Amino acid sequence: MKKSKVSISSKFAALLLVIIALNGYAYYLILQNIYLQELKAQAQTVVGNVEAFGTWVAQGGRVWVKGKSSDSFLSQESFAQLDDSQEQVHFFSKNPALAQREFSEVVAKSSSPAKFRMTSQNVMNPVNAPDAFELTALGKVGATGVAEYTDFVGDDYRYAKAVYHNQSCIACHGDASKAPADVISRYGSQHGFGFKAGDLAGVISVTIPARRLYESIWSFVGIKELALILSSIVLALWFVRSALIVPIKRLTEAAHDISTGKDTLIDTEGIDVNTKNELHQLTLAISRMKNSTNIAIKKMREAKTAAVDILAKAKVAVAKAREDSQDK
Image 1 (cartoon, one colour):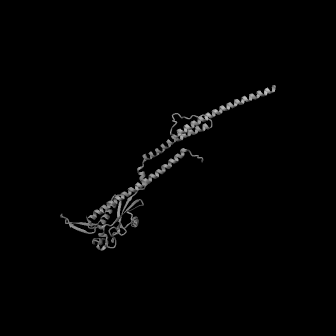
Image 2 (cartoon, rainbow, N blue to C red):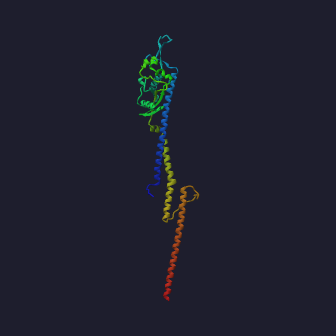
Image 3 (tube, helix red, strand yellow):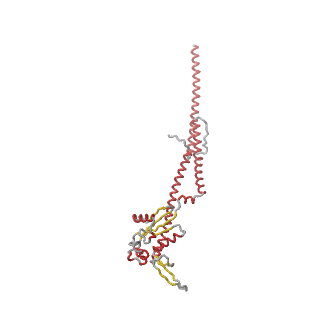
């Protein structure tokens, strides 16, 4: 058997630290999965709201909004106010894509941490041109048909959801020769056309600031939590020392004393002979060994005494025999 100079308590402490490290890493992985799922759920909520807004606009074909003459528009209608100011009120039409883009610009300037935009490999408006992440997402969606693509870019969580043209989209994005005149007037006829219903229109791209996971962990692990963790470690070490190490050390010393013939006291009071406690079983076994050893030693001493007596009697008998032979 290979000898070890390391105590059981030291080995247990090392084992406990390994267990804590492994459990801590498992806890980290669980939190990481939860955190990623939460980020993804937030992004999916943003996409759902954007798609719902686009659907609402598409139900009427376009939405007309009041604004200034310099506002973004496809077509314009002006009406005289009914008061005495004689000023005209301007209304501008927005198709779903334009309304969603302008909505994204409003969100970008707001305090909302989540931002979104819509982009494609064949954009009608150059402002909507894809960035590096969105190009990768478009490539993945187009090549594999996946519905979603995610990645971390710097400190941001990026999410892209594939969007497909339906029949209502084809009025503006189908054959350029059949597109509305105001669309051609605003964007030209070179880009953003030639699609059919069911074709990949592009992606809705969402950006959410993502804290480092360890920062999130430390945000809800405080002094109380650390104190509980340290207390549990100290409690485990105390239990092992009091319930295992100290009793084993006492039994080791007792066994050593028995082996060297020293008298030692082994406390077995209150221990059931049918106990399931391994240390109690060991204590009873060493106690029995002590009793057996004491009996053996006693018998050896008795045998030694008897042998000495026999030897003494033999010597006396021999001496007497010699005396008798000399007298003759």
